[in-house]
Amino acid sequence: VLESPANLKDLDIPIKLKNGTVLVAEDSKTAQKHLKQIFENANLSMKLFENGKLLVDYINSLGDDVSKIPAVITDIEMPEMSGFTVVKLLKSSSKTKNIPVIVNSSMTGSNNKREAEVLGADAFIDKTKSQNIIPLIVEVMNMK
Image 1: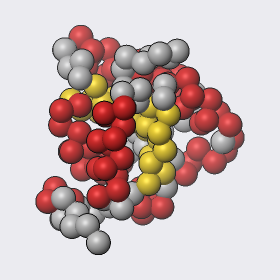
Image 2: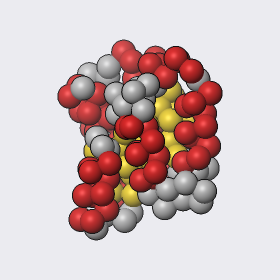
Image 3: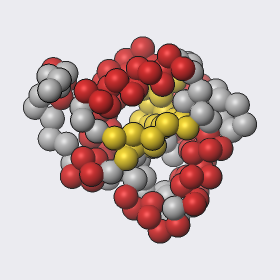
Image 4: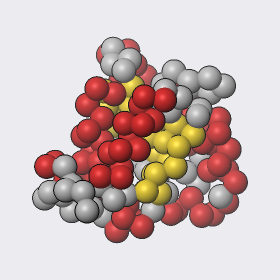
């Protein structure tokens, strides 16, 4: 069994996160691999989508099962649908507006952070700090 990373040692993982599957929209292979590793190390499950449109289509196909989604992580720049659109769509729908949405991007300019916030994203993390994404998800879920 893999030692869970230090930043997960004292972390109280919400049941919803333990039992659910975090949805991730990310088109970069490197970032995909990195996130997969992070989730595997934490023994948490995630489902990867190549772009925002696929993620949103998947959520729409779930009907009322969306309550099982502990969180959504999205990149900003992706083909077909940007992360900003993902945030906007999820946060403007009564069905999905309570799902924590975290923007995971290397475009960390204050404009992007502000834009994400205005659209309703619950948190923003710099891709180079992805190793902190699980504690961040927990923090956001606990604020809900």
